[in-house]
Image (cartoon, rainbow, N blue to C red):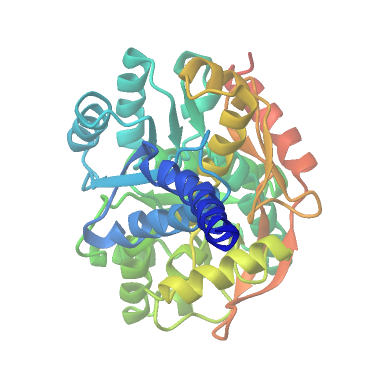
Length: 418
């Protein structure tokens, strides 16, 4: 009898023990996901960037979910293709919010879409992380301020100060005074043109800008632009043509011997080298740099990079870092606020810092400034391309103290200081 009772007790406690482990797992599995809608470009030449953003988010979402998700709820990411069209981006944003009932929105679209989407989120008071638009005006102009919009993306003023400083050093050394530019024909490109040459001439007053060509997004043939550049006979050419468009421009430029005739400067060449889109990496092109396998030279970046390459068989780009960092900010803000309510999360985001793979060494922390809700302290450097991995060498990090001092002066000039 005692033996039977003992066996029954063992079985009973065994069942409780199993239940003790199983019930939380079931509850966890049944927790309603926190849905995040991501609008970006997943077709055409720029498709690699939209997919790279989702890739980066996937890695970080996996980590957050292993840590218990957001208030015990797992993150679920859904994404749709804006095709780079303003009307499509706006429709997707509205559908995410009103039909799909997403909990938060990530806007990984171009600047021209982002300005329109921001008006939707302003009207609906819906917290949104902007992870691609880089135009300075988007957050610098007080008239554009939206308390529910947070930019976790690079910004033209920061990038172009770095580009201009690096380019000025080379221009002085090689006496490159006659310049031309190839600029995407919308707000982002024109903003980058203005900020770059304002600062290049500040650092090297001998510079003369001979002109610029303005290709459309997804331009099929750059031949007319290339012949115009060659006809002007500049000594140096600055380009902010990006993604697959940048790849196409470099390939077509090589056919015409463009780079044998001018010194070519590219803003952020890594975004079409790291993905493998540019099969033959040029040797010795000056470029700004935000991230590569060897920059920032931190364990956080090395680990993220290696994990990304192992999972997706290509390197991450800036959209990978920016979108994934948005999730890190969301996790930290929700934890701080103790709720998913947008007003409380927005309040927690202002002034918040997180450690992330593209944080500028040695701090490795990026911060959302409270006054304009935009990110600072990400990796910033000048470098040269090289045909061998990791494809960038002679990396020269630029101090954020310098960047912020130059930003302040530029914004005062524009009348954009609050």
